Length: 264
Image 1 (tube, rainbow, N blue to C red):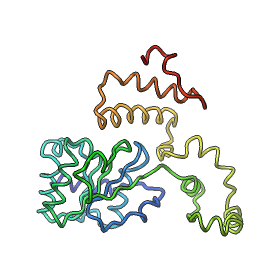
Image 2 (cartoon, one colour):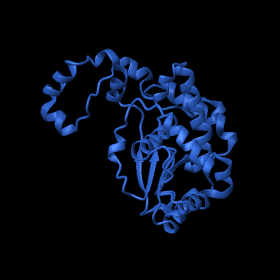
Image 3 (tube, rainbow, N blue to C red):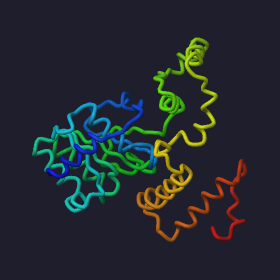
Image 4 (cartoon, rainbow, N blue to C red):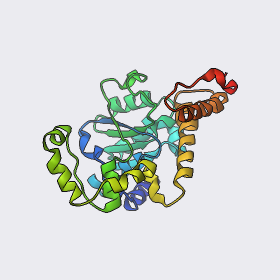
């Protein structure tokens, strides 16, 4: 367990989170079982670590981040690992990529019933239907979606501003004043095309080839998230990618599968 605490402390101390996500204030952190879904690359891992950094010291052993890719976690399972953590004084367990563990939903239910003083926050793929496909979690999990950067978040990150968010009612009733205040600080139109091109995914900050990273991200979503979570046979991988290509090139028309022999 000590090696997990050391890894947790290192990750929290070296965390680079340039934007505080709005979802952080929308979640009811008093709930004992919280699921956070989101597309690969939108910042779910960073989000978990940011929560840990805001609420706990890096060396506070009552909070722990783990990734289910870890071989030890894969071997003992979520329930047993959570029990070790809980009985050593653990209170908040942050589990990344929970779907990599077989029978993960049943194990989470078991944790909920066995360890009443333990809060579990886990991340998963957007293709997961937490409650519909996992009845074990009905009544115990609160599910949230973490999306990519909004245009406002991208603006704040790019300009260094702290533009606040507004409810739809405030925008409708006070849009002239809001627009005047924003344009006094920045002209959003100057940044909108850049946002459309590369502003949604946080990895544009890596200063690498964005298009190449986006392609890798899409392939990981298809090969891991869709095939693994939905248990689709590997032989259909090429057809799924061909279908995505058809969707991106068909414009407003409906893709015609009969014209593509490779999909038959």
